[in-house]
Image 1 (cartoon, helix red, strand yellow):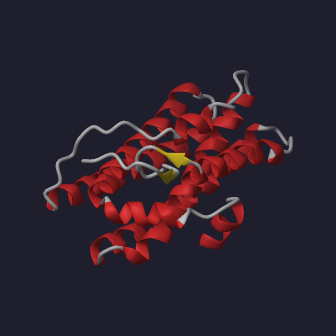
Image 2: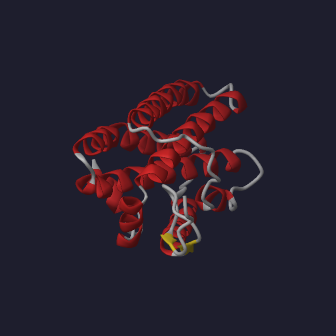
Length: 204
């Protein structure tokens, strides 16, 4: 499972990000919760936009339910630990990754699904890389997410390939993978779950 993810991505998460995550555990959990909400919202948006694609409707419905369940699990941990759940601005990662998405169909759907798959793959890779450094509760929770995140990655890319009607999409995947590599290795002003190498960590 994880081998497929690491083979797919062009680079691992930098160690500097792991250090920042361990230094800011509250912000990690808050932004993780926000990411789960956004993932569910992305799936729901696809359900509303592409009503004639029954395979997409089924897979995105299941994905949205799972992401909301993950959100519930994260906020339960946040509440248990006495962390104040605040609104934090998102990192630039997802917005930058979506910039090359084409505007005509079916290219728009194909690119949107590819981006979804890459975000799921990067999330899965970060859960796995971070887990060994966490306390027992968080380690167990993050490792429990790997199977579903890996399946979401596969579902997104499988749907993207089917939307292409047999046209090879590897060149489009490469475009977004190269952008993912650039984003996770470049400096970000503040730490977030999908941020790059933290520069000046915003004080909390």
